[in-house]
Image (cartoon, rainbow, N blue to C red; front, side):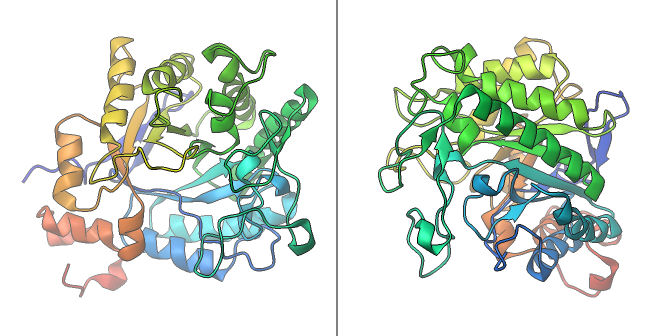
Length: 376
């Protein structure tokens, strides 16, 4: 029986060799808020969480939003790669993922004005952590709160922007030292890069604001800086919010045009298309696969420029929850891969179970051999 979900996909690389991923079920980065020491160092929880997903059959396992600066963390309990002392604990995660014959990725992130919030866990509110309780001054495109319930951020100067760009590059260097195969730059969900991209939050009048060229400058500079230090044998990806879901916000056509230029320049070769993060969410039509059309728009824009899967892999994400749904997204050409988030939290063996449902031969189910007696 034909099934695209469990066929390999190659993420292109500048050296021309590409990186093969064993199947097209990717793990979306998902914050765990499990660094109780607040030092950014991965813990046994992260090994258990990511290790289970690797053993459960996902082709690409991506670690959660990892702060490139301490002030760039969403919460004090987030992962980090802002200093060399964090590398060895990341390498431990990578080694286990590689031991399951999976590809290891990490999402490099800066939360900007949405940093310094309490963890998204039961019993915590979604507001800024006070300085007296471990919080810090946040930064963004301009002065002011990014969302109504958050404290005011400080607008970055051009020197401050240069520092952020350099921090992304240094974090990528550390990701390489840890052995990660793929880096994904977080430009979605209302965090710093998205705060610059969106006209909702970027009202700057200098070269980092105004039209799309100005608003996308930070993303383009980060990509260029990371690509300088990230090996040519390794793919570089970007996760974007395809739209703000409001008329005066960021639109998918704008996002797609920026991505097209980055792909055409050979700087990125994996795009994960999400959405939202800068509004209260009331206008978002949440439902099964609700973000897949955004991935289609990006894929179509690339195709119109003659940029197909051999130039960049586009993955769709957003309430893709069952095997048939995922297979349909791929079989109809809407995306080249799917990123699984909440469904993977529910079932770390989602990939192996999906393979069984698609009638992949039992001997080829993508799970750790220790699970050979499982009845997927």
